Image 1 (cartoon, rainbow, N blue to C red):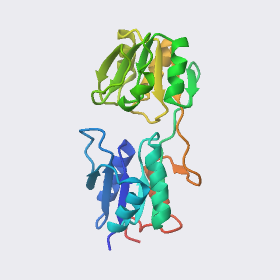
Image 2: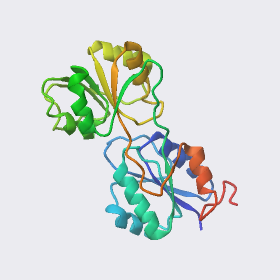
Image 3: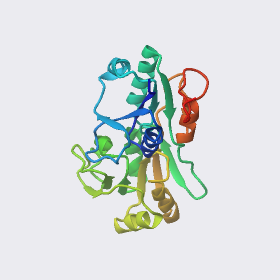
Image 4: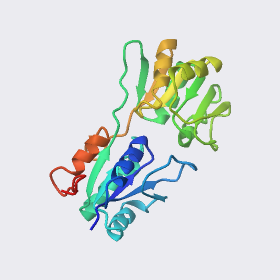
Length: 256
């Protein structure tokens, strides 16, 4: 029977992994998307959209569709999905690999202020600046909605919905962005503080370089920890190696 891999997606790495499996003769790959973005990037193989109904629902789906392995390649902040994947893997015995791109690291000249949550980021802002470039995604704007004395520039792939800060300018755009583009945006809006999640990756890292060059403080929301007992691989190559490694793995590209 052809190996069947479920990729919990929504990231560049998930699309790359799906393409890798779809290119292998006889393999089946299904990518699951949460459905929060109306026009996600093109993905090879089969695609399903929407939730599973918690860990038990995911476990039932794995059994029904005879899934041999799951790769959690969701966003580093999709903590509930990762918890459900870990629980479902435990219930079914299906192999689980977690793929997480490495987080960003501060360098010389960076003025980073690490915080544990969006709420903590909101608490830190009034002491750091008055004109905020908020790049934490449209789903987390409620944490900043009470900050009536600050001006926010919010960048999002799709228009955000309330609640959000009352003084908000929305920029609709999808990365990657260049340092020149990010510098121009920061200057055009008079931004004096940046807020970001530690998403990692190159697609949105240019804003950090631009902030460093302009001497701006950056509030960085730390990643949630992985569930107990789980470790992550940093890239697609690592995920493939883990799937074919010791334990209930999958055959290699040549079928062995």
